[in-house]
Image 1 (tube, rainbow, N blue to C red):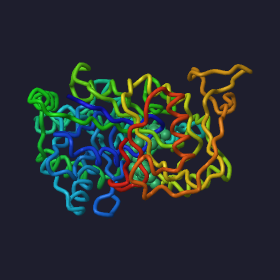
Image 2 (tube, rainbow, N blue to C red; image 1 turned 120 degrees about the vertical axis):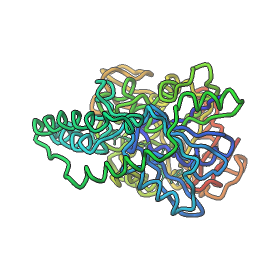
Image 3 (cartoon, helix red, strand yellow; image 1 turned 45 degrees about the horizontal axis):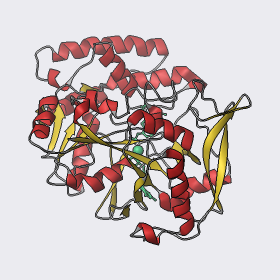
Image 4 (cartoon, rainbow, N blue to C red; image 1 turned 180 degrees about the vertical axis):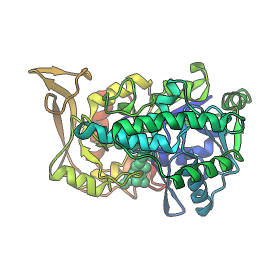
Length: 419
Ligand code: GDP
Ligand code: IMO
Ligand code: MG
């Protein structure tokens, strides 16, 4: 069966840490969407490593790892990442790549930059990894896939796409990729072709039919979903649990559990609405205590209180069965901790996400809870956690009608409390 783990907010919920923690129970960890816009942090033998495209089960020797058809791959970045995993003592012998995954070309990256520049103030705040132009070519039926690499038409298809991109880049006033970037790309494509390239949908279904369990690892977060996120300030893939079916080739009937990961507060990186954002000293304190700087781009993350309206929405869309709270430790030391339980707009209180989500028009309605001074990094059981923190969790559970079954209190594997 397949369990899906995904982020319920705007990304960076700590998915990588939890996947690494859980992956020894699975035969396969599989990424189903996104690409190197993701930055999933793991802590291996006391050292931090960020994975962008490789699934977070890679440091478990008994676990296979699949980059599924729904993922977009930058061959250059993938080769660098493989070397990094080896430097950390890992092996990529167990890494498999679907031949239907699409390739990010250097000109996709230039196009991403050109299109962001042309948007000016209205820019999305993209990670500039070429994600959107690659998905545009995918849905426009002009993309290059891993399985195309060894076909005789590969160079010609590449050239056609490249020529089209150049015209678009020129139109937008951007810069074409330099020749060295193109050379490195073709060299990396040769390397990519030597990896374990598989027919991902058969690969995963054979494992499932053999009674093995799979963990599908989401990237980004539910509020960045192309259909249901804060459009147009979203990414270009379906980040929801439904995306695991199309991004891997598994039937919805094979999905068993949906693990929804959320931070004890909220963050967002890039532009776009964020109703419970704190542009004050408290927001700054959360950023510092939580070390909220992007794992992929190093940008400071925007911070705010937990938003239960958005969380309930994400839980509904994903069919979450188990909630997992991360970065609970970051909230120690605040006098008061708040959660937004409703929004006010046009003098009306609302419990549901509206079509127009605008920071200036939506006024979050907060409930404040007494904070807790105690550090919780070293707690090993739910019972020993501070009373006020347990109260905070129980208020959240009452509002969202689902228990929190895992609490993460630090970046390391062992800083995880199961209930
Ligand atoms: P992901 O994209 O969802 O995998 O999350 P990121 O790796 O981008 O961001 C999460 C950050 O929080 C990383 O720096 C993690 O090492 C760190 N982290 C994860 N869980 C915890 C936790 O429970 N407490 C603290 N303090 N840090 C955590
Ligand atoms: P993980 O998997 C947080 C954001 C970008 C930008 C928007 C579109 O680490 O949680 P894109 O490059 O996809 O076109 O950018 O989405 N974004 C993320 N924010 N975590 C991520 O991934 C993100 N991937 C993309 O900042 O606002
Ligand atoms: Mg991240």
